[in-house]
Image 1 (cartoon, helix red, strand yellow):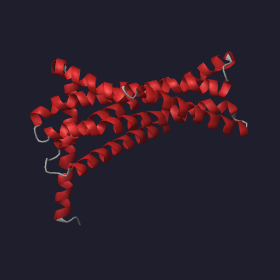
Image 2: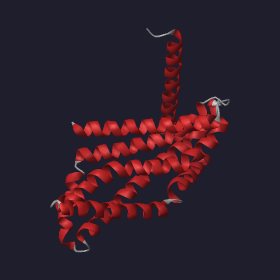
Image 3: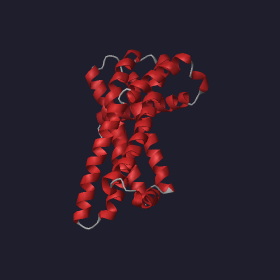
Image 4: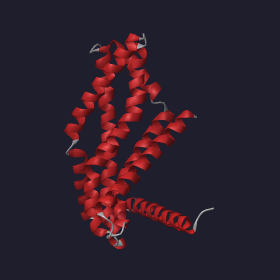
Length: 247
C-alpha cells in the first residue's frame, strides 16, 4: 500500500508535469499569436536562429557530407558482398535519412543552443509575467533551426548517396528517383515531417521550462533536469514514430 510520503511525492511530480505542459501550451499559443511578435521579439528570434542554424551551417554541412559518404560506402560494400547492392540506397534512405539524421540534427541544435537559452532564461525564474515574452524567441529560433538543419542534411544525403554507389554516371538516375518516391510515400512523408516538427517543438520548449524552476535550486541540477526532460521527450517521439510505422 502506498505510504503518505510516496503519495505526496507523486502528487508533487504530477503537479510539476502539469505546470510544464501548461507552460508549453501557453508558449505554443503565444507563438501562433501575431500580436506578441513585435519588432524586439522578431530581432531576438532572428539572433537565436542565426546562432542555432546559420553560424554552424558550414560545419554541419561538411559533417553531414562526410558522414553520409562514409556510411553510404560502408552499406554499399556490405550489401555488395551479400549480393544485395540494389538494397544499399534504400537502406541509407530508410535508416539514415528517416531515423538517424533528424535525431542527430536535433541533438546538434540542443547541444549548441540549449545551454545558452537556459542561462539567459534563468534570470526570469519565478517571474511568470515576463517568462513567455523572454522564452518565445528561443522556442521559435531553436525549433526552426532543428527543422532547417534536418531538411538540409536530408538533401545533402540524397545528393551524396547516388555518386557514392553509382558514380557520376546518369544511367541510374531514373531508378534512384523512383526509389526516393517509393521510400517517401505519402504516409511516411507525413510522418517524417511530423517527427521533425515535434523534435523542433521539443528542443524549442524544453530549455524554456527552466524559467519555471525555483531560483534557489542548484543551477547544475536545474540544467541537468532540463536536459533529461528533453531526452525523454525525444525518446518518446521516436518510439511513437517507430510504433506507428509498424502498423
